[in-house]
Image 1 (cartoon, helix red, strand yellow):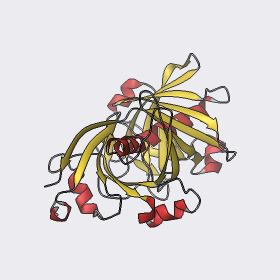
Image 2 (tube, rainbow, N blue to C red; image 1 turned 180 degrees about the horizontal axis):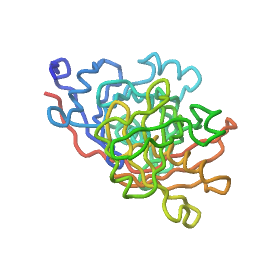
Image 3 (cartoon, helix red, strand yellow; image 1 turned 90 degrees about the vertical axis):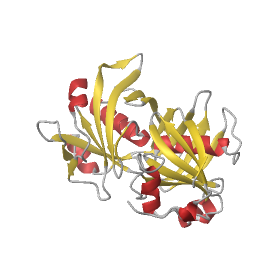
Length: 306
């Protein structure tokens, strides 16, 4: 990969993660640095750059057309999470990333947020409200929806997924969390471990803008003390396999809860290779069912681009 990072020389960065889903973060309040896709890919390269599943630029919403549009109806969304996948492509939203983003804003002194306080953030997947907790952050991810609703409701699946290590194509359910997901249920942990995610799974039909693919295994028993439990691995669009995916955990809980039927709980714990995140369903003020994601956020390093 050849790209001259000289235009970014002197730019400060941080490295952070949420349950192992890791990011390069830069503060650019006034939108002075339009970081090209090739530069993003180089910075996220684990051998030639800093390394990360994606890059997050903290910019005031008014500096971006997408952010300015959100401000028209959400004046409190001062900050915009400009998120890029590790290959440099734009992404609508990242559930782990938005927690790390808010933690980064606090660490940089750009916002003040005490435990119990809330902060409204602009993203390409809409406005997200993030609350600081005693041990991390929880995010109102907004409403979920089926991408192919008629097929989903009629059959409980709407596509087939081919992945290395699985003997036959598996049915999937396509869920939008502001970004697209295809959720596959597997039989047990051995099948989950044996699925090879070094190459992108093939989804047919694929959602219009591509998709993230989650492979989920329900616990046995599925529900303990009123909480549902799932194990999950994910291949992220534009990245590859990651240790965690916040929107993917939400999508996996949506699909598993749908498959489990009317008695399924509203609270879930999703185990990913990088840790455990919480998912909760609740009625939103807009009359739709919303999904809340909770988990930790960590800043591990800071530096200056040379």
